[in-house]
Length: 110
Figure 1 (tube, rainbow, N blue to C red):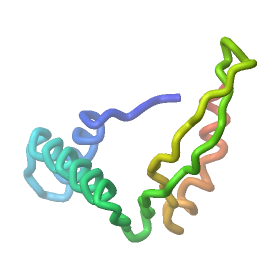
Figure 2 (cartoon, helix red, strand yellow):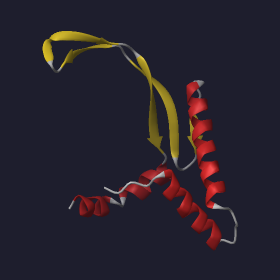
Figure 3 (spheres, rainbow, N blue to C red):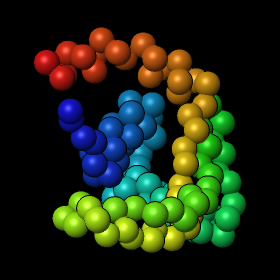
Figure 4 (tube, one colour):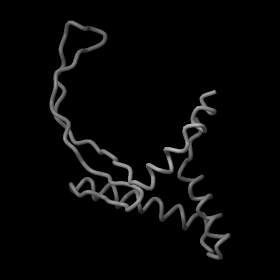
């Protein structure tokens, strides 16, 4: 399945802005993307929830401590401590848009 990198995302956004008459360089757009990532990560690290209407919500959730097993030595147990993880809940508009892409996903799996 293809992957889109930050650089490719910046190129796509720059091209779209260019067709709409805006003149931002790829480097400017890449800087905005990087700043967005930093602000979202910092907000989540502070325990805040980040909501982007129609796109989705990022939240920090706690995973409980549990006992796991070492695959190399199944008889030994390993304590896995509680930790904070990021959960993403897609917005309605994103859900609807992605729901129509099943055909594309199946074609790419081939």
